Image (cartoon, rainbow, N blue to C red; front, side):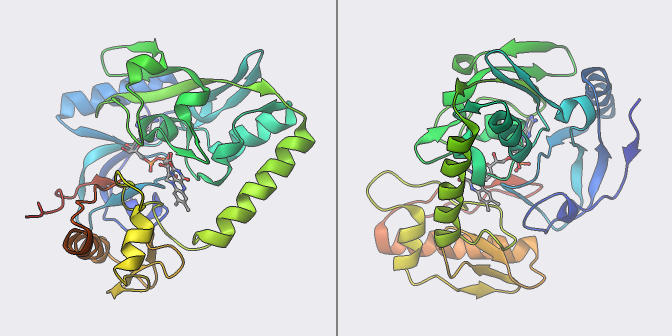
Length: 294
Ligand SMILES: Cc1cc2nc3c(=O)[nH]c(=O)nc-3n(C[C@H](O)[C@H](O)[C@H](O)COP(=O)(O)OP(=O)(O)OC[C@H]3O[C@@H](n4cnc5c(N)ncnc54)[C@H](O)[C@@H]3O)c2cc1C
């Protein structure tokens, strides 16, 4: 049985760097260890929270009452195959992209500025520059305490920053379908996309990526919050990024409560000024849902 740690702060497992201790943490290195950990959670009556790089996650300040799973070892490995890549659910996008580039496999360049894992990419159907996981995913290995199954994108219900992967289901591996492309071209595209990112988003700050999904219509969430005058608005140690208003920065010892308070204020202002109810993109762990706007 994989070791169970207690009291690991979620602040250490998330990119924003806030969050209280996890009730229990396991770091399975194989599907067998993952099945064991999931069985342990089931037997103990504990919920399961998979944390990839925690790059789209906000955890509460109090104890998070769940078994947190971090996929390591085989479950974070990456290999090159005929059709593209095979990767563990815990493999980082950065490593996948490097392996793909070195093998002359293109199509994953869009993920160069998405600091997550293969599993997190599936669950969020992460995307950028007009492409998302549904464009490259061939199939995913989904594991539960009861069993494991390869599933294809149609069965995963991938839509804008959404999938049908349910709590307790773990994406333990993926296969990506990629196309032949010279490494030099891949390198040039990535350099261009990263430069665009650095010019428009706070890539060197502690954030959890987009706070809200873009609403229907012409104005994105960031522009809307900017028009509300919220750039640089601060509550406690959390601040709406002066660079891009759909990001919250951990400016100075932020708590989860500070981040939530900023989200509540941002939604209130967008509702008041644009009549729009912004829907959060960031995943809440151990936090209640945001209040309903009336
Ligand atoms: C600077 C910055 C820029 C970003 N830019 C983008 C962008 O351009 N486009 C975009 O879409 N996102 C972006 N994000 C958000 C984030 O990187 C993506 O959503 C990413 O896919 C999350 O991956 P993760 O592994 O960190 O998932 P986490 O944040 O750890 O988790 C997100 C959700 O996925 C679940 N999960 C994670 N791994 C698994 C697994 N193996 N099995 C089952 N469930 C799992 C978690 O339980 C949680 O519900 C950005 C974030 C940052 C900090």
